[in-house]
Image 1 (cartoon, rainbow over the protein chains, first blue to last red):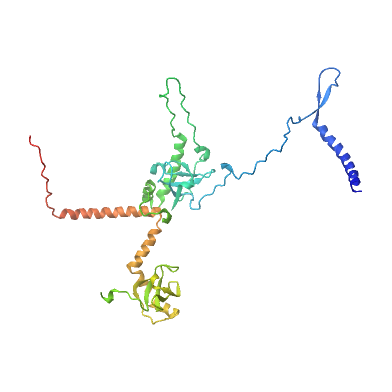
Image 2 (cartoon, each protein chain N blue to C red; image 1 turned 135 degrees about the vertical axis):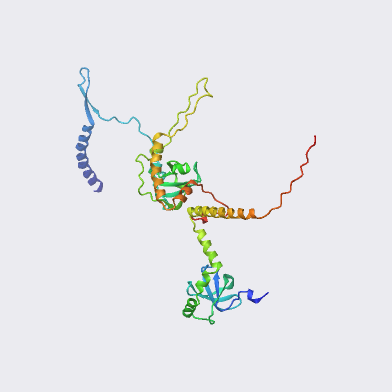
Length: 228
Length: 151
């Protein structure tokens, strides 16, 4: 009783499915005219071709990777670092210098400036892990940064590699990095505002000296015991 | 050896607690329990009445006039009347502790300012020292006889 009933139930279903299927397949077919005599003049051809290859085994599924691309990373900022904080750079070309933090860029890197006149550090990106945040903060709320200061602006430019020709192997000049005019413009624009902020501060003389000096550790000075 | 050069453990001796959970606080020795321990109380300094080993107590020069076993309430009154905190704060010991604390809390900018202040002070000192040096008559410097080669 059981199996017979099933097949009976299955049949009308299949019958119902067929015309629906037919409708769909007919949409998939396209009439194409063909030349030549005595061959019907047209063919019904599939719109999309069938695959030429069917794998015999299932494609191995890639396991979910926990790795995310850098652009999709979440960027946090230490609570001790706020716009206007004086940071001590601990690594890189400008290590030991005290610089002013401006803002965090989209990539998570920090935008800082010396100011250039005080310590030779230009508008620059640095990673916050190479900085020590001090408790000294300047009021940068009124400082307007140029719109174009973003990660793309600071990306490294590919310098042209010199092409070696027959007789000029030792003469080829390397293309040296030169500061672009827009960088100089922006540097001046930003530094002017920051120097104004420092001048308004009560301790401006000492602040100028402070930002111009380098940080160093003496004996019996242990960073984990010091307050910055 | 004069007895007066010692600070004695006695009822009323104010002690500075050097280690433990109450480190850095003042307490009074209210009673002596045995050779190693005292009953100690610091109602105005946040030390509850308890026994403490003498090893943790550093005796100060301040002695309160209190009877043995004085209860906390009256002890507090005596502390305030005898101005123990004031006496303590005026000692160099307390000032040294306060200075140490201050130094530990200096920020990077503060350290820079301190350095500049020291330099300015030392310049003044050196100028004065130089002036003093000039007033002192110094013997003529002894010339070393040079062995010259005679031609």
